[in-house]
Length: 204
Image 1 (cartoon, helix red, strand yellow):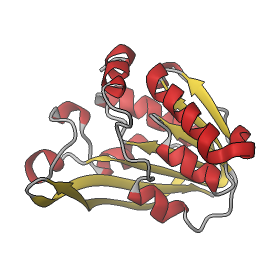
Image 2 (tube, helix red, strand yellow):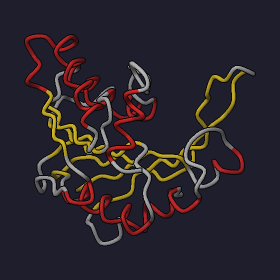
Image 3 (cartoon, rainbow, N blue to C red):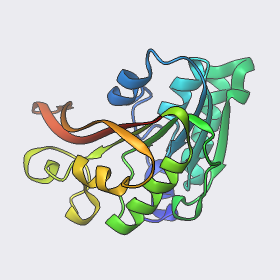
Image 4 (cartoon, helix red, strand yellow):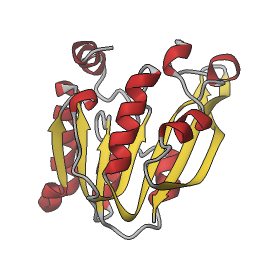
């Protein structure tokens, strides 16, 4: 979907996604000391805002004006005098080049695109990781199509942890964990499971 389609989707609801951070982001970052963060495909900013509330200075990048406007409004309410901890950038990730080696934590959460485009974004994200910093990528696993719930229904934009590890080959990052994880999702008929690809890497 292009930015106009995402704008329409975000405009349909007051908050398209949860206000809470993604569970895998919270797991990884909860005990990290505050630093500089980069949230790519940030949407309404739920992960970036959570980090900023914890003392991080975060750059949130997305191509949806509607989503970023919402993130800006939420930042004013939630961050108060610390609103400057969140920097918002409107950009298409396929044409965005982050500052090299500048971020202690780089996030890509649920960005889905064909493999060649995904690989370009992942490698650009890897280049933004500072020495000792982390890259966290989470998204709907390829196996989610058959054995999970929600997410894109096009196998061409899904991926596995192995795919992500291959995307990072030669980028100078050490893979800390690369695995498929189950995420409970509340549905009208009860709790279902979504299958997520999870990769955490570190620059030495």
